[in-house]
Length: 275
Image (cartoon, rainbow, N blue to C red; front, side, top):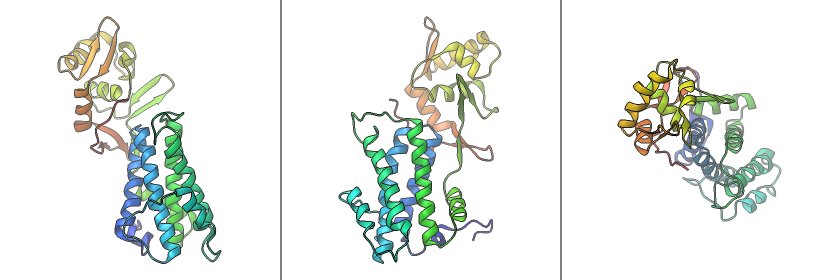
């Protein structure tokens, strides 16, 4: 236990090597961060990496020895099915339930628009939400068996290990809000535009930023940002879109998430690829 009562990773995962444990937890952290930042595609792609780390841990547990790092089997489906043939002296969770969850998660990674060009489903919130939930469940089951604890303790351990973040841009219906009211209007505007993949109507941007005067917002916020080439303002269409320079500014200087306590945190440092 730490001084705050949280379990340390080396206690939770027993004899699992540090490198292999790191492969699992780093990927879990990436999934949670990407989901919080509405980055559906990398969130889903990392689901495949988590599957490989989880499979390696389960295989190592049954074999009695662990590789130092995650190993990708030649055929994940067949490898997971082979675990079901292991003696029932091993936990059913490791023989059946975790392997079947791994194959389901791996299927989404390969055939839901994230593993290959031309798949029939584009990266989206629903798939990413499913992946976050499945990833946390898998890690919780690993902890439950390896640490020999109950499901609630395992779940709480996963939540303490994963980055607890909330997207700073929140939407409901047609309304969007920046959840840090202390940010200046320019910062709010850039964050709102960063979360969009297409130009935003000026009137919507004014409303989302919670500004009371469209004329003042245009004069003091939009036009200066346009001159700095942080946004492109099309006066004839009444639309605003963030530029590559604006995207870089957000990545380098502005928070994209807030913690559960409401403290703003910066991005993970990865530049966003606009689709």
